[in-house]
Length: 250
Ligand code: Z5A
Picture 1 (cartoon, rainbow, N blue to C red):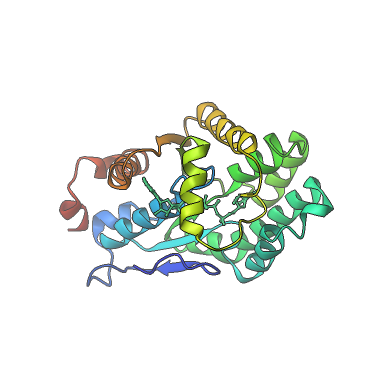
Picture 2: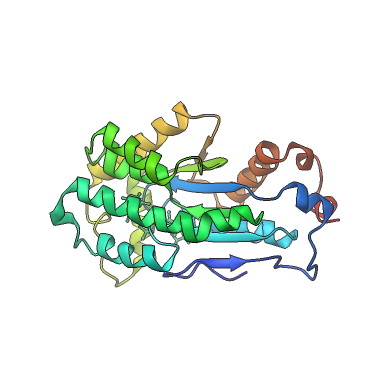
């Protein structure tokens, strides 16, 4: 599987095995929208890639993407946002830019993929705006809801994994991964800010249990991946839950 490259989405279409034609079981699992959310360094990108790989491995068409970004237009906006250049415009303007990036991403990448019955796995989506700009960034709820209605409309995720990890651990992981690279506009905020983000993500997971699943991200990667896979099979295709991977692929 191609890794999620910084700057563009990886497109995974019927990859991972020889089959060009999806199996019957794979067809039953077609066209779902799964998002990963949580604070810094919680393992979202890692788990999004593992899930995409697993789906792809059983012959399901998968688009692995991320926000902000995921389309050429949105990647330009990503650069403006993460460099901190938009911070001086204020939180409302930042929220507008995230929404503009999302509108382009949805129109040019996500919705076409879902319409063609691919699964879309997205690293961050609307809950990040609710949390970073809304709850923690203090942009008013009606403004955030209005933007969400305009940009997302009915394209809500079918399932959202909220990865939860103490902020100290997540920040240390993110720092270790970054190495010598400079911290971005959000990583630069203090510990209390990151603790508030985590609390806000947990609250959303609690409020929207139908759509969200809270995951303990302090576990080893393989345990988390197994929990996520079980949930995907159970929530998005109950029939597949009792089958082994080989049976699903058959
Ligand atoms: N933002 C916003 O404000 N509003 C919005 O609407 C949206 C976004 C969509 C995007 O940053 C920023 O934009 C983000 C919020 C804001 N804030 N920041 N910064 P980004 O795309 O550059 O990065 P990120 O989304 O914040 O990702 P991250 O936190 O940096 O990482 P992660 O994806 O959660 O984790 P990871 O890269 O998979 O793993 C991090 C490291 O931990 C890595 O070395 C892994 O190998 C390791 N890892 C992963 N899992 C484990 C386990 N289980 N154990 C041990 N080590 C692990």
